[in-house]
Image 1 (cartoon, rainbow, N blue to C red):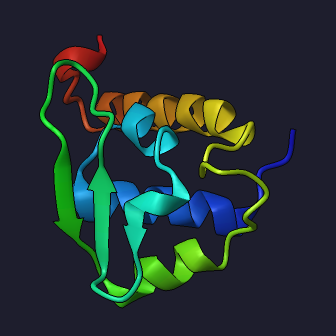
Image 2 (image 1 turned 180 degrees about the vertical axis):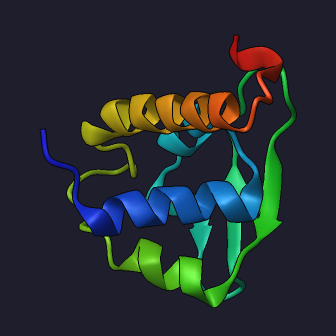
Length: 104
């Protein structure tokens, strides 16, 4: 399955700006984005966390607004693949930097 660079970049930018978990990013809906106020709302957190709201950059809002709106949620089939790629990249980087932490 080929991943589209714009979707991948948007997903990673959202993780970078909000520090949300990748599973939480997969649960976002279009209604969770406030383009005017540059807010991103998470109503379905993982691991017993509380719902959160982040002030995000205009860059991320533009990236989100450029994604195709084929469904009610942002969830795309490729996000499961993207999550696996992201986790493997983190493990690889941790090994390279000899900083195993919880990735052992």
